[in-house]
Length: 212
Image (cartoon, rainbow, N blue to C red):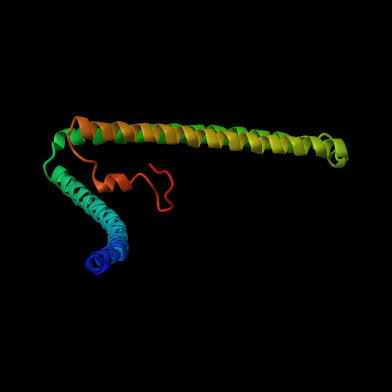
């Protein structure tokens, strides 16, 4: 009876021992597969992040090139428009605009000259009067009070001249700019033309300062 049951007991023992081993082996295989999959995903993620970084740099570079290209196109378009405007322009309209501007420039220059001339006359009189303070007596010209009064008068004379000169220059600049602004507006809105480059550069002298 025992011998008859031995094969069954042996089979049961094998199953009892083998089942955990098979289970462990199966899970070890699953763990290895999971680890390999995780590692592959990490590599793929890193590759994707690197790709996105390179793609962003490439797009930035493309935008820079596009900006430079657009700027160059605008410059060429402006040059072409200027050439076209000068070549196909209503000459009579520009003639009137230039005439108005030049008349205004003459008025600006005349007023500025008159202001400077008047200021120079005032300066002359003030300096003359300042030095006249010491003529009252020979000894008075060297006394502290006389010297002090004369120095104050001289200082005031030169200060007044500088103020008058600066005011005249500021007024001249303002009126000159207004005349040129009117001219440019007329050229653009009425004559439908671009101001020639020669006119643009004629407004300054060799030092870059304001000029008629």
